[in-house]
Length: 473
Image 1 (tube, rainbow, N blue to C red):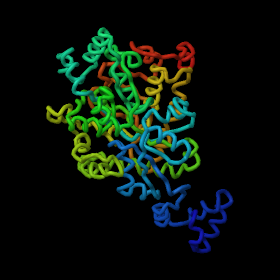
Image 2 (image 1 turned 180 degrees about the vertical axis):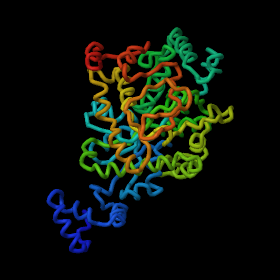
Image 3 (image 1 turned 45 degrees about the horizontal axis):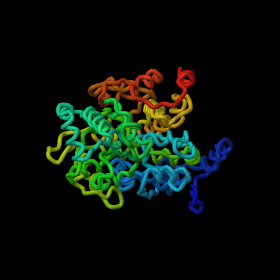
Image 4 (image 1 turned 180 degrees about the horizontal axis):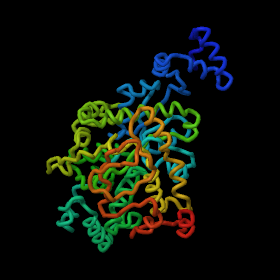
């Protein structure tokens, strides 16, 4: 009832007597609210007065199509439905997102799936316990190269470049030729050191025997600046989210050679992140935000709503890109080059299907394995315990239960074993899931984390493996 003390609720004597009894065990405010009829309580909730510790909140986004869930929740009134008066702040970089959430300038934000992990562990920044109870989407990225590099790859290995998904085999041959000629390593870009994009482009390159720390130069460029840097030849390729792959294709300055859906079917991409301190201080506000985001994600994932999603997020205040460019991937198609017709890729953006919003602890553990693989984590840690402290399916389940929707009853699942749709039966009710294959045929068993980490042929790990193994039996 904060900020509304002047609005007195008059109750009959019988209600007052019952209230006095209840007040002995709970706070007066809570007991008083329990006496209010359900209809009045729901109206109070809609106005943000039923247990919300904070109603005015600001959430940050980066101008990418997968900011859609936050933007749709704001623009279509889902946040308001759950009592939240939201502002959406477009940020210039992922570092801005991380730092503003950390200091409380943003209440929560659109984050890379690895960011809450990195923030908590202090990878690249001062440690700040950060959590996620909501995964925003699956897939959504691509790898694009310049026309010049593409032609060199075709010349180096025509057969490899005709196959899809496109491997990095031809790129390896180009790199080897450059080494032989004494040339400097080529420069590629990704959006942030702990981004999905960094791990995806590394995974793709390493699968062909390329060491991304030695054979190429890999730099950070904010998503909206990728196209300009490719055009000015500062870089020869990049991994980024949409619409910045399709933008390069439409401009005719590059070719998108593989999507992250093809690298790992239905991989986790972005999350809604808040500090642990914020979540504990405002638990009801946090749960309200998660509920609103779940409903917004379900709405945005319906094919009949995708055109409206495109119109909403294309605006200058959000993605600020031509609607036809945003429309291409958002409506289930993908264009590899300007010379080719768009192909059907219905799962390029998944916002709700396949339990997309569930924060799988096994996904958090996968990102930790990649941080270990590439030397970002240099001290041994208990991977399972760490994952469970950052990805919070318990909070998601509370929200899902109140919404009456199905939720997984397990926190861990293997990847790389389903090549078609399947049904998750370990849930409150069966959930249809999508394929989860890796393009190189590898399997990820979260019950055998050490085997997985040791299974990579290209790795620059600096962790003491014996100590790591002791903590991860």
